[in-house]
Length: 150
Image 1 (spheres, rainbow, N blue to C red):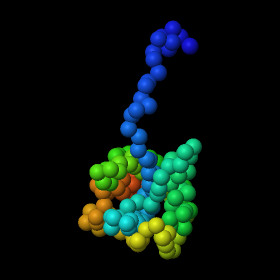
Image 2: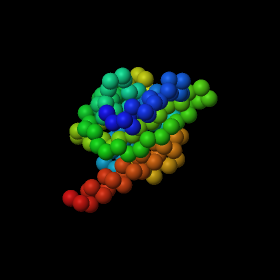
Image 3: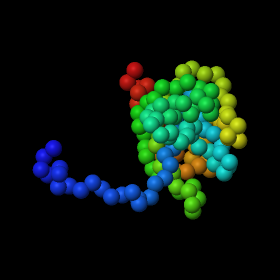
């Protein structure tokens, strides 16, 4: 260590606000995005809470398999944003693009009310946070760009 490193105090942020992290994936099938309806009657991306010691890319791959029964590979990081679900509950959302293995149908776990496939145009009219809409738009754009390169 240099002398400068010895003089810099460690941050004393143990009193800083902490909140959960939820890692979500944008799964596309034939120009439609897979969404789940939650207990607040909002549509959301599949995914879930990051567990201690878990890498974000592993988290959403695991959660998508649990929630939808789909196998996916992690794509690029799309967005991060803070979502205030209620006055008392705030969560950091991290979204990734997904490369799913081919599938014919999609189911959902009991923790959600419904599952649906929606076009990009339909997403604009759904009850869902704007952060999810931004992530979906970005993955649609990146996916279209990748198709045009091939």
